[in-house]
Length: 227
Image (cartoon, rainbow, N blue to C red; front, side):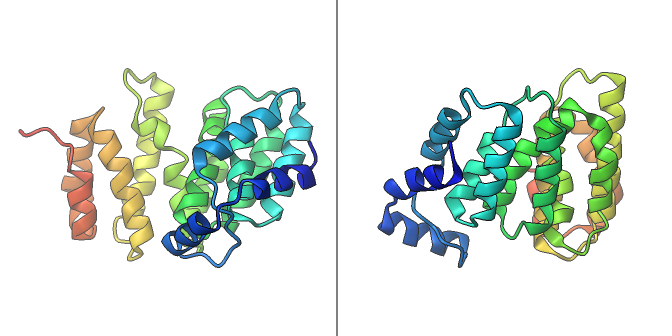
């Protein structure tokens, strides 16, 4: 599968009416073709069959560089898989995308792929921690979105418990961040955590909630059981 062929397949299913709606919804000037995500996922799954990992990474790189909304989603879907071995190339590519994030949709698809690479090698969290101090707001957000699996775990092993505490430390550093993008990410992490560790969520909000925006506090506590 060449990048040109993959993009031609995407263009063949373009829906101009849906494209206009999607571009308006995502507030993007990037080219939008109008394919729904489940269909893009089907195509990416088809394309990666029989491809070795270097070829898949190369295709993902080319599709991301094409800078079409759907080609970037396809790039992320090519790398959204728990078992990729070796995966250093996949991780390096995903990490290289982070400074280019400019909206939640593409960032979330790419972060979903990145989360699997962090689970595969948690030592990569050292690199992710550097994003928490980035001036680029979407990089700061990505540090939380890619680590959401640790908010959603039950029966944590000691190493996972330490990672959860580490990420909560990053979230604490974000509590007073004025950007709504970051506030929403903190709220999302805490909201998901509340379903698995209500006490940890309450403790965070008691300690850092006053610094958060009211809407973020409300969202973070939305699923907390009554005491």
